[in-house]
Length: 289
Image 1 (cartoon, one colour):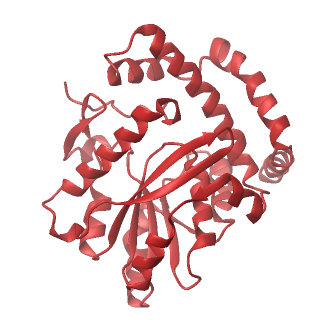
Image 2 (tube, one colour):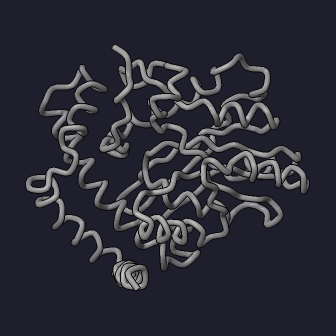
């Protein structure tokens, strides 16, 4: 019953026209920023440590832009529940998807490196532009709230991509290989590792930060091509994603170099449009000085 009510409310919100939705988002900014102050200390800390060269006024400007964008993404994620293929195709453009299809044509599976940057929730619509015989998957972490987790699971599956819980990644990939299926698998690879998994550190946004290396290990182990997904916000509610080949032969690279390449590209994206990164995530809690 609780899930039915939540889903009904979600669907009602998703049917609000975009212009009205953004008016609501604008209206919520003031109580969200000035009264609720959602994760304000973490956001300010992350921004000031990541951009020590910026003045406090510049930091506050980015901070406010982030809050506005964060509210937009919440509403945009909700809209995905009912958006048509034509609508999301106009609002989430993949400018060079042919490079992925070429890898698939050459019988090479693909790892897509993403970050919590831009509207990562709409990236699942990529499944509309790849061949039907290519298996599409996205790795995710379960949300503690089971009702919200179920809702997002359904949202992310609408356009034909499989949701793969992180602990099931190898099993899913092995199954596809055994069935001779070509795959395109997306990883949001900038998560903060658990304390017991702090094995590799690198320089990212002025921090000596621990990083996951599992995406690199899978990519190299199974001979997959690797692409960074470079997302840009063109204007409110409109995004473009392009695919940058990270290396011609990832398997030839020394350990951790592919991961280094990914974080270099991600930092470049963040510095161009810093308000589009998820600063509310406690990304640097285990960073070293």
